[in-house]
Image (cartoon, rainbow, N blue to C red; front, top):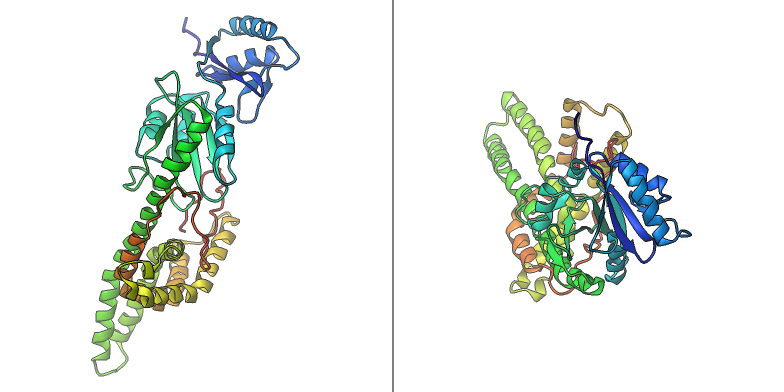
Length: 394
C-alpha cells in the first residue's frame, strides 16, 4: 500500500490570534480538515486561528486528536506568526505600507512568485530550492512591493527582497537586480534594515534598470534610423522623378516607424522618471541643461501619442480576440510616425541624457517610490484573465 501524501500542520504563536496553524504538504487538504475540525477559523491568506473562547490546552488536545485521525503531523515553529512580523515591519517603515499574508501549502505553488521576483540573493534561491509555506508581501501602494519569508535552515531571522515593478516581466538573471538581505528577529531592527539598507539599494537598482532600458531602446533604434537617413539623403540627391525609389522610401519609412515604436515606447515609459531626477546645475556638466530641456519638450510633444497608445491597449484588453499582426503593425507605424521628431531629438541628445541620469542615481536613506513626473506617467498594467501581470506591449 502506498504511503499517504505528507500532511503537516505548522503551529506558531500570535499576539493577535493566539495559536495559528498553517496546513502544508502534498496532503495539505487532510491537514486543513484536521485544523477546521479542531475549531480553528480561517485567516486572510490561508492560515487558521485557534478559537479565542477555548483554552489553549483544550485547543492543543483537540488538534492532536484530529491530526491523528487525518494522518497529519504537527510541527511547532520556533518563530512567531509571520503575519505579525510582517505587520510590525510595515508599521515601522516610512510611508504607508501594508502587509499581506500568502500561504503556499504545496511547494510548486510558490513557483508563481519566481517570474515576478527581482532578486540576485538568497531570497530567490530559497524560493527556487526550499518550500516556503508562508510569505508576506509588503507594499507601499506606490509601486514598491517586497517579499518577506522566514530564513530557511535557520531557527531565527528573515529574508526580504523585491518584486519587479509592473513595468517589467523579464526578471530572470536581470543584471541590475538588487540583492535580498537577512533581517534580524526583532521587528524594529528589521524595519530599520529595510528602510536604511534594502530600500536605498532597491531604488538605485531600479534607477539603473530604467536607464539601461532607455539606452537599450535608443541603441536598437539608432542603426535603422541611420539607414533611413541614408535612404532619404540618396532620394533627395536624385532627379526627383516619382517611381520605384519613392515607393521604396515610403515603405522604408513605414517599416522604420513600426519597428521604432516597439522600442521608443520604452523611452516614453521610463525616461520621465529619470529626467525628473536630473539636476544639470548640480553636476559637472551644467551646460547640459539645454539638451535636457529639448528632451523634455520632445516627451511633451509625444504625450498625445502615448495617451492614445495606452487608451488603445486598455480597450483591447476588453476585447477577446484583439487585432491581427498586420493590424498591430499598422497601429505601430502610425504611432511611430507621430513621434519621429521626438525620436530624432532623443537620438541626438542620448549621450547627454545618459551622463546626467547616471549622475542622478538616488542615494541616502530614501527609496520608497519613484518621483511623480509631470508628463507621461505610466499607466498601470491591466490584469490578464489568468490573474498574471499583463504584458506591456501588444
